[in-house]
Image 1 (cartoon, rainbow, N blue to C red):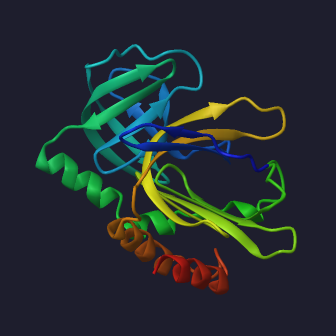
Image 2 (image 1 turned 90 degrees about the vertical axis):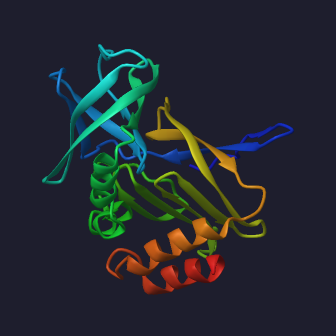
Image 3 (image 1 turned 120 degrees about the vertical axis):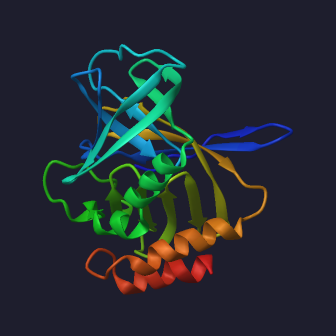
Length: 238
């Protein structure tokens, strides 16, 4: 299901929204030391994470310290941080700015680990409603998501890559954009699980973001994404 994005303009920055499909299960979770419930990690970077409860509201408040363990497909990582904001069932957590904490998070989120945990959701045959024009969909729970769309004639029309806090998009006839992920929230829809993403779009395409995504693309194996598609994406961003 493709929808036109909304554009929010100001004198200082440009924000854009996208409605993108959401995979209903997440294997990247957080268990707080002083809470028996399990939080889903909706988004994560090397400096912080956004966590959510499926039911109920967290007992922690804004500016509260938070410690616990991140769990992901057999691996775990103990972290400490500070709750920077709270909205309903969601909270934004900034990791403690201590060298040992940030180094361990950085190691946990090595690009090789993220690629190893990518799943080709476009190959899921049951229990997942995929938009008609979405040709390829790769997901590594919170840190990485890649969408490749096609025209009605089968030619590729656009792609979006969400890599940590980085947003990159190419669209046929529009060219390339880079930006930063600002927020993500669930969208109620009777047809498909969706998220609304808000991005701060860079005034000019940023080379550092392109290099980061280029490294990611070069590591994705052909059994997850056909080589001709990876080559096409790399051609647009290099």
